[in-house]
Structures are given as C-alpha cells and as structure tokens.
Length: 142
Image (cartoon, rainbow, N blue to C red; front, side):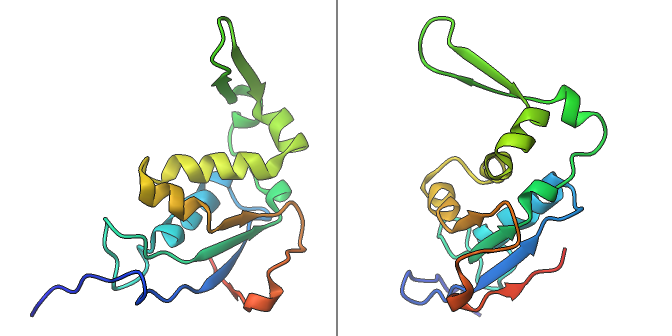
C-alpha cells in the first residue's frame, strides 16, 4: 500500500456552518480549527493545506466558562516603547465578538504558511445571517 500526497488541484473543499450560541468559545474555536486544517478527512497531510471552509454564526452568544469573562485579558504590543495594550474579554465580547473568536481560532492553528492560508477560509458573524448561502453550507454539530 502506498501513501498518496494530495495535490492542490485534487483537494475538494466543502462549506460548514457552526452555531456558537450557548457553546463555549474555546470548544467552538477548536472544532473550527480542526475543520480548517482538514483533520477530519482521510486525506489529511500535515504539510499541505487540505481543509474546508468554516462559517461561524452567533459569535456574540458564545459562552466563556468560569471567571474568564472578568479575569481573562487580550494583550498586544504596538511596537512602540510603553505600547502594551490590554482589553478585558468582557469588553471584547461586547464590542467585537468576531475578533475574540478569530483570535481563539488563530491560536489553535500552526504558525506557518499552512495556518495562515487556513485562517483565510474562516468567516465569523455576530448574528444568524451570513452571506454564503450560495455555497450551500452544511451544518456541523459539535
């Protein structure tokens, strides 16, 4: 039996919808990262980009368990002296829940070209509506 290496033209990509309403943010992000990498496929190869498209709806209704909503903070640096910026997840989930979901997914993907290419196939929406109805996405159950 020989090992097959999938080529870029041979990969068929499907579209999946994940509903984040009432589910933990981390579990939803882990499921999305799993699909984006293509780990659910038989033809998965770690060094090739063979994942599918993911649409996450109801990001504002995702739940942070425990005291994470009050204690967890998102920090980034501007590059300037004294430029460490900090925002609490309570504020982030109120103002921009799409960014909170994308940051969680980005942290679960590898830091290389495969991870960056995988992240481009992820779309996160605050509410129920999404603009990819023409692609006929299938519902993914957690």
